[in-house]
Image 1: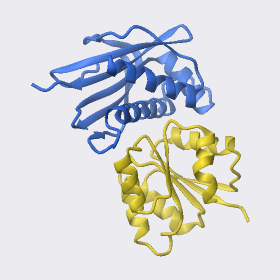
Image 2: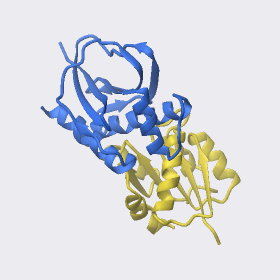
Image 3: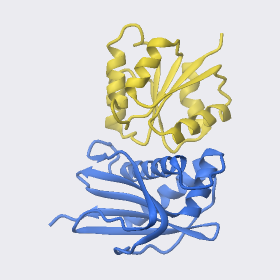
Length: 153
Length: 123
């Protein structure tokens, strides 16, 4: 499947190049409207010829681990540094996925990244979307990278 | 005489990562200044002697392309080289950036080696 391969390649490139943490992709699946718990999600919207949303969903513990590796500083809680780092991670993922889907770069527009977190929340994009979700293992813990694309008709 | 670089990115995380990558690339700047968007960058350029600018494209208030346009219209700063450093490196966007004077582009994610390859000839 093209979209899950793009997600896997983009995520592995970012983690190996800039975060220096080893991750292992799992079996792709279609995420429903399940609630996320004690997590943080980085989000970027896609508009233009391809509409939808790129999201990375990380348990708090994984988000702090990634932020520490990303910035080289210890973080104790989900603070502004973590929100900014996870938003920037989503931004890089969306940029890589956009490059694969739109090599010239003028057909798809990306929103500014944002981050949401909480004890229990859900992240949904639009009606009539198809979701491609890949779980990744990081040090025995799992995070998700999800691409929701609007399907015409 | 030491050189000064200006890093323009709305993400504090990315400004720190670019700073670290410059050091890892062995590029020796005496001073590294930061700005959070194009408007802030223009203000920094007006008040400081900057040798090279590394700028994101997708930023609030004034994005990287708007920053390039505004800079090109100001004779006092128009010749300071700018390298775009962004997730947005499609050919159309980079061509537009170069038409406003950008000297090169680095795609996020990047390595220190790539930063050195693009930035090295400019300093």
